Length: 385
Image 1: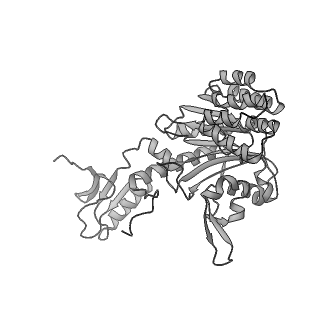
Image 2: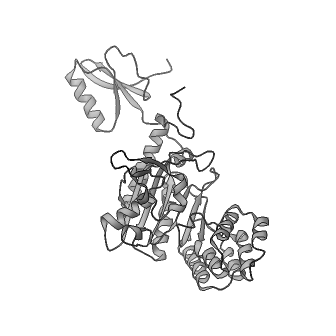
Image 3: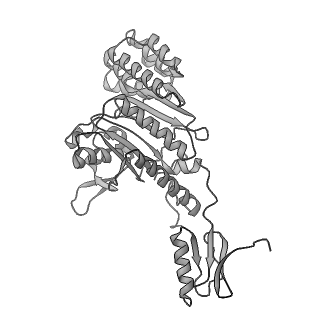
């Protein structure tokens, strides 16, 4: 059956498509009034440009093909964030703070989970040019506001900091392969394997690494981390940053997870993840990724977040949809044509019947245009009779 779509790809039918588009407009308008400018990168780029600064995380997720014009290898974007960083560093080339947003499809070679699409609609916002916590705070608040505006407020927002693990790894002298293994075990919270893997490490780093899976929860987690982790300057700075964010965002449902190291090779500071009660994994992800524009000629501090608009649309209540007005064909009546045009200019959905068309199977029509004594009137359609 050639008409079947490949696995983990799906059409968006009218109801879902309308919900996705409503959310897209709502959230991009929210970003706009906060000063974020919309950019639209291309779907394809040269592979080396597309993977710059984040090859470890994106290489396996990126579809590759050969450009018949140049013979070079192209990639279909799996993440728009590196593209937006390229635009900031190489094309806009501004000296001050730049706020950019985006929304478009990306493509993954494999789904992120059993329920995920291989063609997410990635929506996000990024701040370039500010290295302070104020930028992280703005992005976290904007992420929470976006979820609230979509009708899916975050039940929990986890904060972490990749600097904690990086400081421990550097102080313990971990080599590349062992560091990667520990990263995976911490992400999986596989404590028995983690204990075995750390058995040959010196103290206090062995105990500190083993404590990371338990360092999650409320603000008391930061006090526990201060007692369990060595007082390395980078760890002290990371915990201080998390405390400051917690104090400056009192209205948000913040919690902490010091073993959350997603994007470790990409992020280099505060990371965060928003969760919704009806969704099994994070609904929005973000964090700081300073220096990503270096390969494009200009290293810039950066922080931002993104989410999948398809997943968000499934979590939010769908409205009943715009009701429509059914109108006869206007070919024989210029007056009727003018009335239909006027109604559409006011935002009304008007379905004009084609010649010999008996009714509409499209938008639900709850009203109709009828001629009474030479005047066109809008009357309710009685579906009970």
